[in-house]
Each structure stands twice: as C-alpha cells, then as structure tokens.
Image 1 (cartoon, protein in one colour):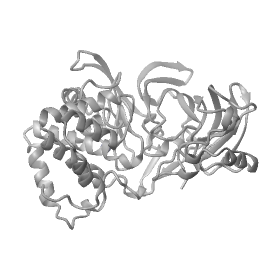
Image 2 (tube, protein in one colour; image 1 turned 180 degrees about the vertical axis):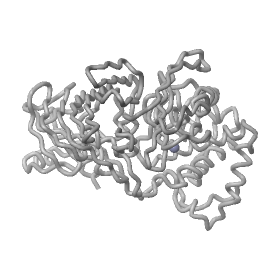
Image 3 (tube, helix red, strand yellow; image 1 turned 120 degrees about the vertical axis):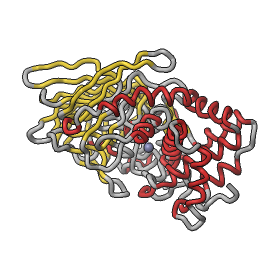
Image 4 (cartoon, helix red, strand yellow; image 1 turned 60 degrees about the horizontal axis):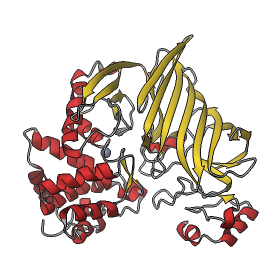
Length: 472
Ligand SMILES: [Zn+2]
C-alpha cells in the first residue's frame, strides 16, 4: 500500500505532505527536486511489516550507552545514530517502542520530536543533508514485544535480575531507537553499565570491562555490518568463559561464552562451538566475523536466536541447535535478507546445515533425509500450504515452510547441479554478499551462473507455489 506513493516520487505529493504535517507512510521517501528538504518516509516498505523501518537515510553506526538498574528493571540510555541522508531531510523518523524520550539532538542542536505508535519523529533545528548524528536520550522500563504469532521478543527480563534482548524480527526497537529494517545494516558500539554482580554479553568484541564503584561498564564493539534484529545484550548472573579457537583458515578467534549459573559449566556444548564453526567453514567458507561463542539463559521464550557472533539459547543447546544457530552466522547474519518473505534464505540454509552435520556424524545422507521428508508429507500435508519465498501472513513467517521446505529446496538444488557446484554456490553466496543483503532472485541467478543451468522451474515449484512439487 505504501509502495505506489513512494515510486511516483511526485514533488507535488512531497509538498502536500510537508504542508499538511501528516506523517508519511511511504517507503522510499519521495525525493524532492533540486534538493529541497522533505520528510523521510516512515516505512521501509516490507510487505509483512509495513510499519517497520524508515527511509531518507542510511544508518552507518549506532553508539548505545545504557545504564541498567537491577532493583527496578529500568534503563537510562543515550543512543547516537550516525547516518547519511539520501536526500535533504526536513524531518525523519526512528523506530522506538515504549520508553520515554527526554531529548533529541541532531548534530549537537536540540531538535523537536513527537511519538506516533512505534515511531519517534524528529524535526531537526535545520534540515540535514549528508552525514548527520541524531542523539536520543531516553529511559524507562523496556517492554517486551509480542509478535503476530504470539511469541515474545525484544527486551526479556530474566529471573536472575537481568534481561536479555532477542529481537527477531522487530524487537530491537524495545531498547534503542533505530531504523528497524534488515536492509539497513550498520556497525555498533554498546556500553552497558550494570551492577557488578551481573555480566554483559554483547555482539562483536569486548573492548573493555571497567569497574567503577559497585558497577561495571562493558563495552562491546561490532565492526561488521549488523542488522538491528541481531543486536543483542544479555545481562545476567553468568559464568563467563573466554578462550581462543583456530579457524580453518588459521585465524585465532576469541570465543566468549556466557552460561547462566543454574546450568553449570555446559562444557560439552562449549567444546562443540569450535568444532561446529570449523565444520561449517569447510562447507560455507571462512567464518565471517571476528569472534564467536554462545549465550545460554533461562529466557522462557521457547526459541534460540542467531544473535551476531554469539547465538542466544533459551536453556542448554542441543547439538543440532548449535549447528543451526552457528550456520546462521553465514546465512542470516553476514548475508541478510532484504525482505522478510525471503526468510528461507536464513532458515532453509540453517536447517540444511543440520542435515549436513547429521550426515557427517553417522546419520542418514542429506538425500535420504530429503526422501524421508518428501514421503512423510503427502500433498495434503500442511507443510505445502506455504510457499517459502512468498509469505503473506507475518504470523506464519517462522512456520515449517521456511525451515523444512526451505532446506529441502537446497537438497533439490544440490541434486540438480551436482555436489561440487552446489557448495561453490553456497560459498560464493556467503562471499559475494558478506556483510550485506541478498534476495531469492539474486541467489537463483548465482546458482544459474555457477551451474550453467536454467533453474527457473525448480525455484518456482519449490519456493513460490503453495503446493507439493511433483516428481521428487
Ligand atoms: Zn534459524
């Protein structure tokens, strides 16, 4: 619904909207002619989550400073969003759910702001163009976001007095103002100030851990591009483990793991991390980031999330759970979808990684696993009701179509192009779109390029038709 507005790029429309003071629910803000400032759009244009994301700028970096009060569960925070305007902006918006905003500065000058639903709309003292920094001071008790399928995400308070963020797809806006779309990735710094009894897990690398009085500030730095939903902090009473692993390419990667005290040391699970990373490097190419590890907490959400660098688990992980979430570091985290309807590019790949692990450790081959699933799901099975690359209902986004049928699509592709070409495709996909985004169309074109085959029918049958593909 928002797309036709944005694609017209009508100057008259932009002026009308500016005069009326209405918020622009358009994707791709209408660019004003001759650089006249105009408002940014308040939607990234995703068909499943049209309220999420904004346009008119590209975020380069988030600098988050957050102080957590354990006794009240409240935070006081400042997030500096450094961005590049894609056209001169008279006004722009950020996504923020809950929390109280005290002040907004744009390049050091106080700006006006208002809140509508989950938008923080900022009118800078002077229009911005080029690179700018919006600094938001805010605080309060963060809320938990409820997804269309009823699951909890975003800020999750935990029984040990801490809290953990698991934010797919929208929960990032419960703890920092952002451009909440996976297509606008950025680097991050998070400085988290907590009572010293708590430890803080984050993304990327630990720059410092400084004690001041009874509190400690943990500074995590993410130098790789990261989608907002993969940004994580987890504050809790943890056992913290640091070691180093050697990657297949000979790199020394720091391994930071955080295990909630109630689970003991989880030594076997932690010992698996380097093994799984190397296993996946041999198949997918070099590990894409600068560190790894796991976070294990009693979250009560019922799922694990591939938070960048170190996945977060709700309770002790299974072997295949580790394999799945670590595979996402390549497929999901380093190469991220542009549209949520392409979720099979994450879940199908991570599910296929489980099959690869199983096959290499005494289980059935990936081909046998495929045949068993195909036979177990006749045409009447609900597995076929959803086309993995054509979701229309956000409540079904994380249904088995993305996982099972998505993974089956990769096995079909492998049998069609042959195993050597198949792994060339997987590695090249990870390399070509590293730190970026990709679409199903781009993946198909790459597979056709590598294999020299027309794969149109295969992709169509397996990804775009809500029915069981015939003849497999
Ligand atoms: Zn997954």
